Length: 56
Image (cartoon, rainbow, N blue to C red; front, side):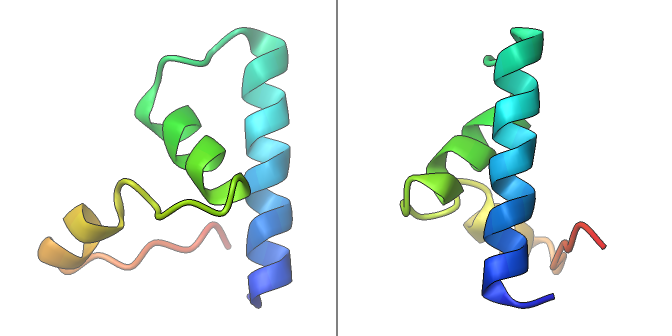
């Protein structure tokens, strides 16, 4: 997955969660940050745990 595909994924996730009214979860906060060009708030935790997550 390239960077454009990843951003598209997170945009779709963010929109779906906003439509559902689910804006208090960590995954929503992650999607929000990524789509706003901010650092992924869970990236340092993933690296510390040795996990590199990809949606596909």
